[in-house]
Length: 342
Length: 110
Image 1 (spheres, chains in turn brown, orange):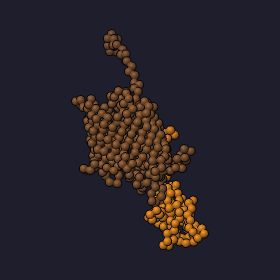
Image 2 (cartoon, rainbow over the protein chains, first blue to last red):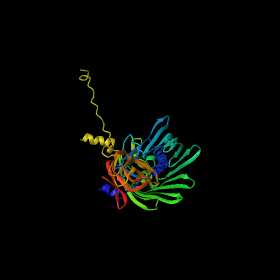
Image 3 (spheres, rainbow over the protein chains, first blue to last red):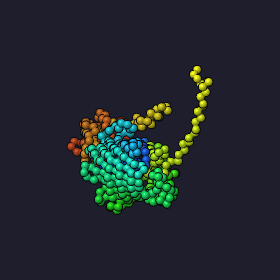
Image 4 (cartoon, rainbow over the protein chains, first blue to last red):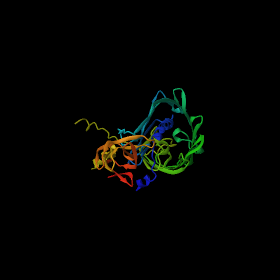
């Protein structure tokens, strides 16, 4: 019944859409690295598998007609750090395999005549001084679509400000500038009126292509209004209202409005709980999953950061409530008379 | 049973249940000799599925290809390519019956 409803608005990715997704995912991966590798954090772990169970949910549209098969997105990533002489050194890798295959798979794709399987990997090293809220990083990015492309990137983060340029040879490809002004307990900020400052992000794809993202806390770092739009050329992309069960953002309820190429705006939303995300017409899927819409998308996923003993979801202002109880262990005292060996 | 379900989940192999190949046998129900049952793309490219000439009333051999979905079929009669319209292939083996209706060729899957 649910899927019958979904098929009535069938979305069909094309080979062109799948190819154009690769550079977009590359930029998104850099931004994810930027969000994950903060000077105050220890580690980040992410994984995600979008699995559409029916072969007619994501039919590929080519000149030949429509092909039954499966659009997919599989990703894995981590950023791990360790202290050495007062500084925190980190290594990160974010990898994604995405595309379309005429069979569904977990490990080995079938690679039929119209299959298109692309990979995007970001590697990086970071060095951070937590006490000064300072982090520097740099690394490589590998894109494997029609041709193989190697890019390199730099990262500089100081407290609420962060900048990340990415290059191909000596050409600047992308600069992401973040002004995450909102007070974050995870960063060591105190609760104050600054909890209500916005998070701003400017993404420069080129001189004539600049995107802005705004996230505004409107209630106790639980309810947020978010929007993304192009400053250059002026254009609306999406807007969302997001409710997090608590400020660690492990559980989220989201409603989104997204603009399609034909200028029509459509509405959708999703639920995220640890290890699972269920969404319909969600703005994120339109952006990261081949303009996916009009079908239920189930993703087995994870995106956890840690700072000390606490953990949280990406971009969260506060850690998850720590329910670990330390129960004192009563060690039985050794009695030399009875425990002297049998 | 539970192990089987678990194995299906782990490998996500619904392709054990869903076919990705279609096998077609052509039957000529027209009064003319036809040949080369083909797929035609929107920009005029042609892929021959059944590279055989079939006389009226006869059947071709079975040819399998990895096409599942909706595609435009055509068949040759002499030198002319005759459009048979868009048909959905669901995988498995089908008999493509080509008939003449009101002077036009039409194809039906059985």
